[in-house]
Length: 161
Image 1 (cartoon, rainbow, N blue to C red):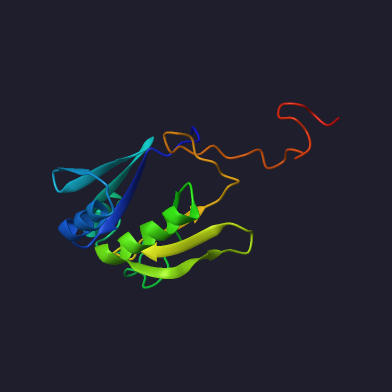
Image 2: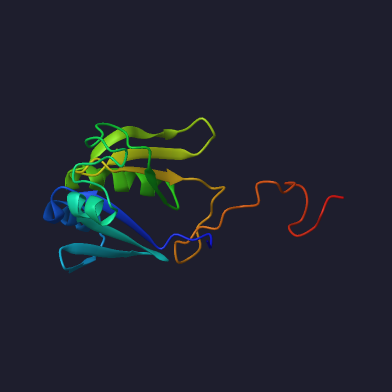
């Protein structure tokens, strides 16, 4: 399997409400057969009825994936949206509140030194919003992870041995 994600699909209870929320944040979607697709850089975010999504995955309606009813609370997945400045974090949080989302963690410098916050969309999907200077974004918004094992004093591409 190649190391790649092409689609992230969120199961939603009310497709129209979910679409309005993301469009209020500036996203532009296309609805095809009761499914909404948003181009998000090199991948797509998809909104689809939660029970139809479960059925498509071979799970019963209302399933959490563990054979039981939908889990209440944190589901173990967080989507992340990195931005170029602290001001962008704050601006996005203001838009989230206006659009009907819930801020679950106010913006602050976190334990490892970057500025972040978290919110949930109307269906409870968790998003982190962060400005992390260690993860610079390209002009197109794409992120390339740094080499975490590199010696900070060593020019890139050179070995310290």
